[in-house]
Image: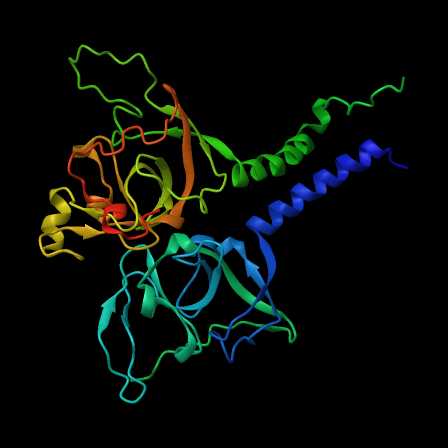
Length: 158
Length: 199
């Protein structure tokens, strides 16, 4: 039997450990918005985030990342990395011809795009996003259907 | 009177577990309240780590590295003011922390120091090398102009890369707006004067 004091102390210890795990290792969060259809639903999806990949550590092209919105810190945006520093990306590819202006992603930045191109506000509007704004990598969806969020990019054979 | 049950003092045997137990609260403090930093580099001289050339009369009696107290409280939500000294992640290397002073906020028109003028040529938002600080960004500069790699080098910095705000230097609390406008003529037009929402 614990005394009330020990109980409170243990609760505080557990809270700090949970906070540490949540902020620096793994966390679960829900996701809303149409910008990642069909990969993610409009509402109600629970996503597993890895905080070990914050600031772009270990992230590569094709990964889904959660970033601090460049103009509103209360909102996080979940999008896919299309270009890492040094890569050349096409700013807004024409749906028919696939052409468009090319831009080189500056050092320390990344180019992110939502999967639902017509309904996504991303790097095509805000420009390259600093890697320091990446706060987590989305590695799996837990609800309603459990699946790994894969890197679905494949190199094109010339 | 009931006696207070104090937690037992840690013995040597339980030292590793004590360290393990104090880490999470410390990390919570660093994540949400603030922390102490040691600053090095001369770009913020003489405000931080003053650098005096050899032979100068003002022999520094201060340590080579200044220790500063910073806060993380509401740093991402409260508006940054001109004159604030901030710690932010370098826009070109997110693993590096940089200490600089906020010289311009969003909406200000800045005249950069020479390097950016040369690099950018026309510049954005002005025909003669002026730079307009975009929404959600700040213009940062070191107090020691010639030895500072700052916004004059890499342009405006996204304000959410800022994660700490300096509160206390060896000289005392950082006063609001102190040192704002250190470089004369840096801010050409303030955001308020343009009618653009500045802060």
